[in-house]
Length: 44
Image 1: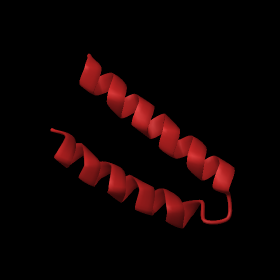
Image 2: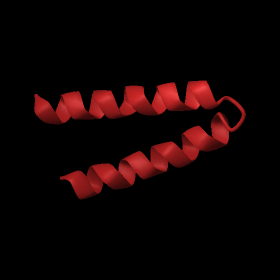
Image 3: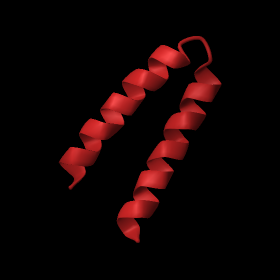
Image 4: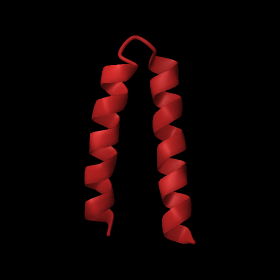
């Protein structure tokens, strides 16, 4: 399960980095939000 999620997270991080290359705060916030959402889905 986590291997598949890790791949998805890496893909998301790559896209987020490309989109928010000059907006570190927004990039970090987006990653935290995505990870939190994914964790919530797995927990439920």
